[in-house]
Image (cartoon, rainbow, N blue to C red; front, side, top):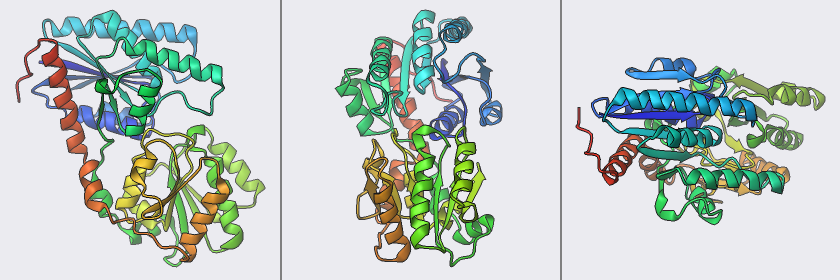
Length: 391
């Protein structure tokens, strides 16, 4: 039986983390031994501990920030853990599957040092982007190119990430597979607007603009707030909901107080009832500066909610501009505010459900897991290992 070790930087609440946990949970236990390594302190640590037949180990020194001494300790710890797993599996193959930029670099280096048989890296977006200083961006691109030499196959959630990897000479097209970021599509297609409004404490007639996102620079929560300020100036009944949490939340709260917008805003923290909360929105707004592919966008569409989002990366592959949503340049709060106001006022109408069947199929989480299992089997066969037996 092959052993699959997934490595991720931090089990915070997010699409990459949820997908990693779901994959580990649903991998065929008759084919694969399951191991998860991550940094300490994520909101989803408890969920990882509950996965049956999975060995979950925390690596305390694995953090998102670049810290040379800590990173060396992390490399040593990951290498030791993978060598231990290699000894445990005896003659069985060892697959190392990394996620997120920091764990992707250090995890793949450790996999090479430990003699892993197959190394895969999932791209949930790159660690470099155009908003970085050129020297910083070049540094991260260089790291990705170096780690590519230790990688048998990449998995991307969007075609745009594949094209970017090709342009930056990180990998050729035939070394990257598109596997969408899956979720329980039926759950989002059947949420309850009435329940969502009740959870938010908002009456039916109040127009609501909402988002679901981590409060971090990538998601640009200050842009959401600025869009809200502009919309509120023209639509005094509008309310704004931010579902999520993160390092920038205190800054956003202080800014809301300065703008006297507190009475219009509701920040819920992380909630389990996302399908119902999405249904409670009249417009879903995502202000990200960069993305891999935010699965909350297809989730909003399946919930019947039009989307106003920035035209970045994989988001462009999901929104058909002017049909089920609007795409605006990142940082263009005026354009986003205009689109949101037009939807709330009824001046513009969109059909967020017109490609429902395609989204239900394309983002099915069971197919996401099956596609990864097929990839494992293909790569093992290339290395001369027999296909793992079925349970």
